[in-house]
Length: 267
Image (cartoon, rainbow, N blue to C red; front, side, top):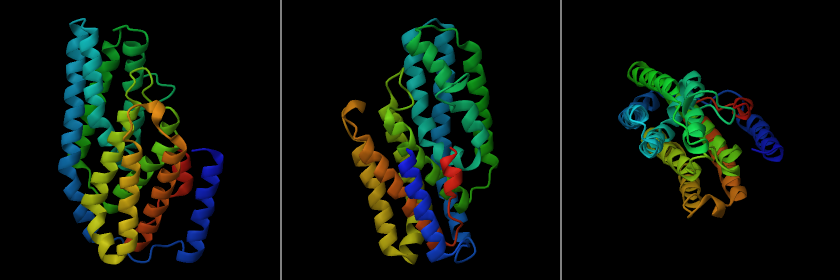
């Protein structure tokens, strides 16, 4: 997100601190931790899809099938982008190992640059490393205790990332799938909000719940264009910003800690 937007977010965060206080209004609701478990099957399915795609990618590389490898890379990305709510909130180190960009020396985007940019298939070791990290992620999904707080952090960070950098041209420029990346991110945000937060927030603050849901819907609609060149990045950035602010307000209403603006700005 540009400096002007970051400044606006910071100022809004300061205002919220003065009006709402820096501490949450109540202890984190145990019901939200229970609700977070409803997200686990969706998460597991997304990561399984991602891992299966990476394993197919390896098979196609061994077979010297460049076009097949490209298709497998694209298929694997769908599950990854939908799962980033979790990786952003719970396993940031794996997020870096799997999906670092723009200066990627490993992970999805290193492989992307070789397959789609250089049209080379010298990525077997990088693909093996990707499969290793995705397998580690699958195990962490089984063992990690999901919490409302962690889910809120991940949802806010991913919403911020869409407006901060992805809307300015996308992260998957060699493959041309940047628009799909953002759409799948938005689907992941929508799923997490509906399964974990919507019911509780509707009970505590119906108008805020409706506004948050509307902003997610607005973001998805703005991403529903025919090509990246048709995307209004300023519009997406503004909606992303508004969604982050809504999620911060939701944190206070739900008795959770607000996602830190300084942490978000460092993503």
